[in-house]
Structure formats: structure tokens, C-alpha cells
Length: 134
Image 1 (tube, rainbow, N blue to C red):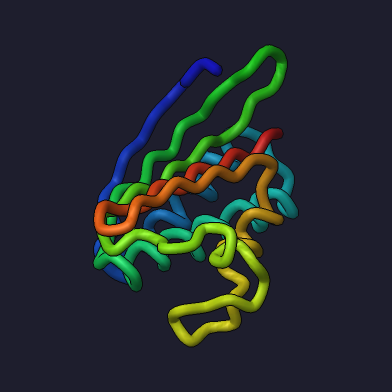
Image 2: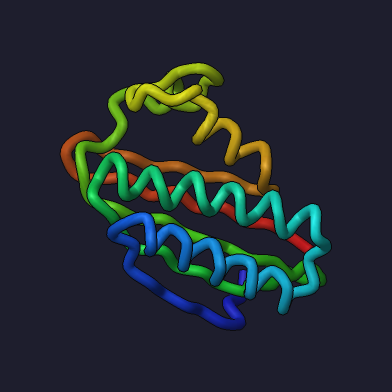
């Protein structure tokens, strides 16, 4: 996979979540994603960036325009230090939550994108990478 363009930002609060959403939408528009796919991507970015703020006090968001063969898309990585996730399989189930929400954040975000990868180490942190192809 080849990276065409990369933008990196720190997200530490709700204003940062809003900025990450706006940046993702701007890249999606520039890439030519239709409105439905823009909305899906922005919704996933909002959820994942908010998780960084709520569970770890913030982290880094990297937005990359990528291409693989004839496909072009956006790869967005959310990396944060913090407590990590004890049981990834459980965290990816609908309805499971440790934050008092509906338990739709991680599994819902996975359904909104084409590719979803999560790595977490207890006591170290978590990295979530999503890709939305055009």
C-alpha cells in the first residue's frame, strides 16, 4: 500500500474530536467519496477519537490518503497510551461497555468502514486503524 498524503494531529479534548472529524470529511471529499461514505467515515472517526479522549485523555490521529493497485482510500490511525483493553474480543461485541454507553462504539465503527484493525496492550495503550476505500 502506498501513502499519497499524510496529516497528523493530537486530540486531547472534544474540540480535537471535532477537528479530527472535519479533517476526515475534508479528505473524504477530496478523495471523492460519496455523501453516504463520507458520513460513515466521519461517524467512525468521531467515535474512535472520542474513545481516545474518554479512555486515555487523548492521543494521535493520522489521516493518510493511500492507494493499493487501482484502489484509493483513506487510512486513519488512532494511537493512544493508556490502560489498554483487557479483552479485545469482548470489547468488539455489541452491547459491551465499560464507559456506561450503549456498547456500540468499537463494533459500530468496524461496520462503517472497509477495514478495521485494533491492537491493544494492557498498561501500554491502543492503536485502531481503519480504511475506507473509494
